[in-house]
Image (cartoon, rainbow, N blue to C red; front, top):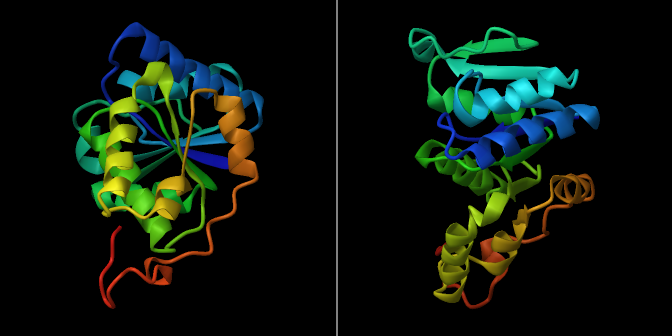
Length: 197
């Protein structure tokens, strides 16, 4: 099994870096390969180092332009160089059986939300989840609930995003995941042709 992990190129505080290393180690111990953004810096580097130190396999996907910034991790099992960020997200998702977001910045949220939107549109049927380290994602989750309350996000789509603060429990939920048999048009309250992704 392979899990795509989106996380920050920055490290945040030490607790987040430590959590990223531990995520890598746990995935490796469970025999799960890591697919990630290919960098040696920040949360990404800590994730990869944690998995590699525990004997795991790590696949990186890095835009060619970032190699020149000397951020490529040189110790990976595989490193794929791609043309840009869109290609990176598509390949990371294609190579993986599930998607996991750790704390990060705007890029991490972009990756998470696009991959989750693809699941809503049935582009893929893979589980998408968030490891809520130290409540990092609480404000985002409150916003998602607000979107549901205001009619901009359907409850079945909100429920597709799996959230936990325990990685082993979240991985078990990934293993049992089945996408909802639902599309926005199933809601009789929607006018024809309208969509609330």
